[in-house]
Image (cartoon, rainbow, N blue to C red):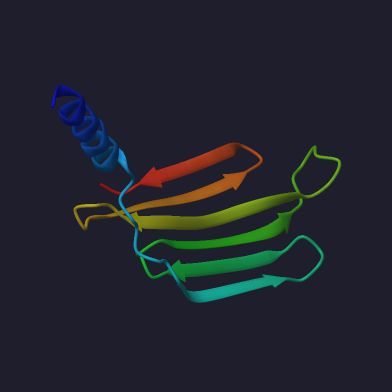
Length: 102
């Protein structure tokens, strides 16, 4: 009887530890444009609330041997409680500059 109880307890623990099945996420919108010279834009939106949008443009920077790509964009997601979190950013010759919404 004790062995049966132990086996049952182990099987119950394994069942509880199994990852919960997540709903299937689908692409609602997707766009990707690249002019081949370093300028681009892409964006997408998923059915679970994730979203991303980014634009990159070549910029001549004084003192640099070659142009740099300056990027601006944002991404967001919806957490388990239904709250949307968003980060907007620029990335240029001076680094990555995010702004996080609260």
